[in-house]
Length: 243
Ligand SMILES: [Zn+2]
Image (cartoon, helix red, strand yellow):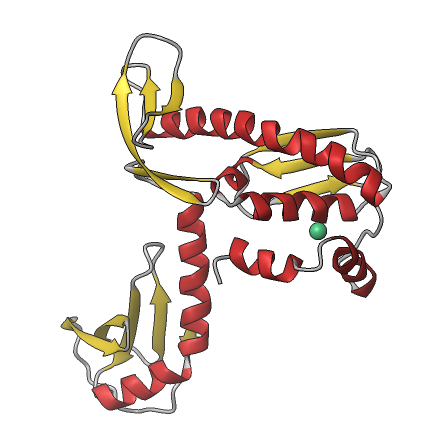
């Protein structure tokens, strides 16, 4: 993101001045001064906010600029945060059905499996040499089995209530959506990551996708369908999106 400035405070220095830090509430910003004409605001994929300003731009001016861009910064940080939730790089804990469980990872030359012990620790038994991406795959397969156990009876329960028919429910790990519904084939696709969420949230997504068999879009007619079958769906949507 670039913002042009009407500033002629240009000094012909080429060296980058060591960065300083700015603090605004919880937010920490790296401030860099360079021989540039416009202010540059960037956010790294790790969520580090960096503000690069021309020489001669003082800290108060930088802070004012930053404050004017807070909504933009917050929006992007939230996106990064959400993305990270979908891409846990460390399996020291795993969320399942809305609860966080500590894990113990062990390696055995048997088929991978996941189970809970009496102290509610999740054990991930993997084949020796399983890479991080492999752990996610084992978890995905397990999430799918656990979701199916809960989704199949829910479909049977909701079909007569809503007067619709679901041909099949499939599962796949997805980054941007919780589910989709093909209204022509009556096939529903659910994100395996849903298994991390509470049961009411899982049910909400299923009912949402089934509601598309009655209303395609997300307009007032669709909302009326949701209000009719799951009056508290807005609360569940909030919980699901962590707001
Ligand atoms: Zn939808």
